[in-house]
Image (cartoon, rainbow, N blue to C red; front, side):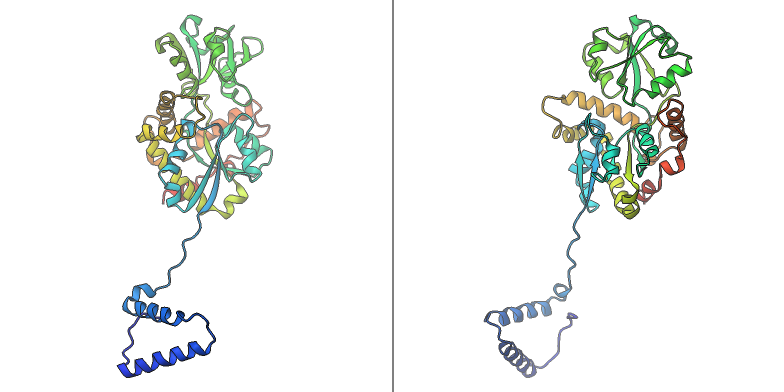
Length: 367
């Protein structure tokens, strides 16, 4: 129907209606109300041309599964906030955020198809790529490393050179390479010049005096130390960024095969996620609201998560960083990460960095 009103005269219109009713009756229809209903609908359409236009059904949202590196906490607040504010839905996406844990390797989940996009540290991605997992980095969320070595001032560790003869802790399992690069810079043999030991996931060993210097993330373990009652002025901190041995951490990566067929979907996901991160940085309270709804009861406090969000913001948008470049992978920082990974055996052959990451998806998301 084109929506234009017919200009039949009254007699002709009546004849047409009678003929229509006769034809419908001859078709054997057993619903006596159908002709009247159709006539009513036709009259309504004639009176309102817009109502006659065909409406396309809304497309079903596209499902995207995001695999986190760890359990829900402010480290991932941007994704939770994007979900709660409907940014993914606005892009036509149904995003399922999958929590991580000690037994979950995001790269394996994405390579195997259990998730479409994952969050992890770049060193772990490089290892998986060398194992020929079909993965590529599509965004770099943390622009700086959050790893530091923390010690009590009475331990006498004012500079990295002072680590000689000390007991230094790290979680190991792929988290130790920045520390090894630090040792190498100061000509410290981790087997002879100091005691490099495995550290638990709490700060109990450090607080109890079992280790002299402990690995800590600025947004988590370092805050645990402060929350224990030790004052910042009573601590010495060695920052991997200041020492030039930092490796890139939280990123977003995707399965290459999935990405090839879903670039627009990936760009929509990144766009909504970066919008969520921008909001989380601007409004930490709202970000933590989203986190606390998902955090395991009793596992953390709102105060700790607020501090974590404040510190995470400093890694995503460091001082002097161009906020419009959020999500971009810096070539020099990625190369430094790859170089350290090669030097300390994370990977056995030099990474083809041009194939390891792409800024194409972030650029698409910015349009």
